[in-house]
Amino acid sequence: MKKRLTQTLLVAALLTSTHNVFAENLTMNVTTTEVAPAGLQQLIDRHFAIWNNSDAVAREKAFTAVYSTDFFVADYAGLNQGADRVNAAISKVQSQHQGFSFTPAPVEWNHDIARVTWGYGPKDNPYLVRGEDVFTVNAGRLSSARVFLNK
Picture: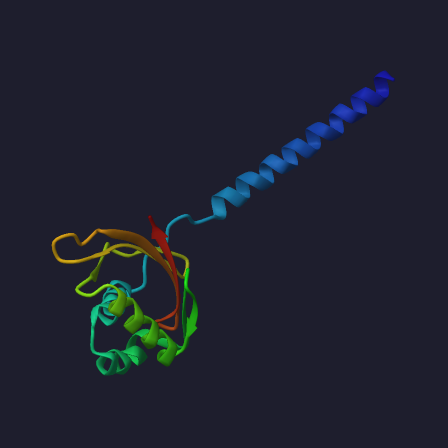
C-alpha cells in the first residue's frame, strides 16, 4: 500500500510539473497585443462616412474602397450581404432616424478583428443610442461587421 501511494504521488508530481512547464512555455509564446495595420483607422472612418452619407449612389461608389465583395452586416434585424443589400439597409436605418449620425470612438484591434464603439443620434444628442461594431478585416478591406446595440 505504501509503495502504491508513493508511486501515485510520484506520477502526480511528474504530471503536475510537466503541465506547469507546458503552461509556462505556452504563456511565454502568446502575444496579447498586436499593432493595428496601417490605415485601419482611416478604413473605419470611411465606413462610418458611408453610413452617415444620405446619398445612396455616392455610398455605393465608396463601397469598393472599404468593403470586400462578400462584405456583410449582421445586426438584430438580420444579415445583409453585398453592396445592394447593405446600401438598402443603410437607407432603411437613415429613413427611420432622420438627422441622426454615427459618432465612432477610435478603433481597437486584436488579430484581424477590429472593434469600434459608437454613438448614434441627432446633433444635440449624438450618443442617444450606443453600440459597438466588430469587424473582420481581410486584404485591407472590411469583410464583415457585427452590430451590437447597448440599450
